[in-house]
Image (cartoon, rainbow, N blue to C red):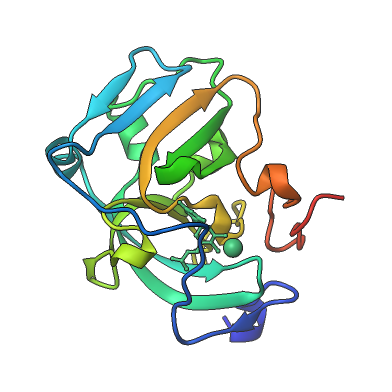
Length: 199
Ligand SMILES: Nc1nc2c(c(=O)[nH]1)N[C@H]1C(S)=C(S)[C@@H](COP(=O)(O)O)O[C@H]1N2
Ligand SMILES: [Mo]
């Protein structure tokens, strides 16, 4: 596929990986860090960092599209697939669970339909391009969402819908707005429809 076709409307290719976030970069202490799963699930769970390291892992290649118009192509990620966690019953959403809220350090949140978070282009990542995440890109754990080159059609959303310094997932029966979604960004954020800002 030509780069042109890979590039959603209004985007341009960048070759470095910019960093974008509100507030400071949090410190990581594996002794106190935890990861919570709660809300519309059969059992709430709290995982330690060791528990996270023992979950099944996959690799995925993504084109990242930031709402501020840069796109970074062919990025390699390694981490945990939410779909796999659900399929293998590490996480059991209730039938009425329809949305997922990502909760990160310092209160950053972002919401997605559960069906999007279960796609192969959504990953709970520990590694970027073969190395552990750097602090500014979300170490130790972040969600990342992008486009998979040549995949079957699926929803591709802007990168703000992947929370860095992720600390938990809350399953929701009704949609709620995350940080940017409540501050003027589009709730769906489809990169091909250029859903940058709320109407
Ligand atoms: N915790 C947290 N995650 C966040 C943000 C943030 O402010 N805090 N910013 C989002 C936005 S707007 C973007 S574009 C991406 C940027 O990821 P990067 O800094 O790794 O490029 O992180 C997203 N995840
Ligand atoms: Mo962003």
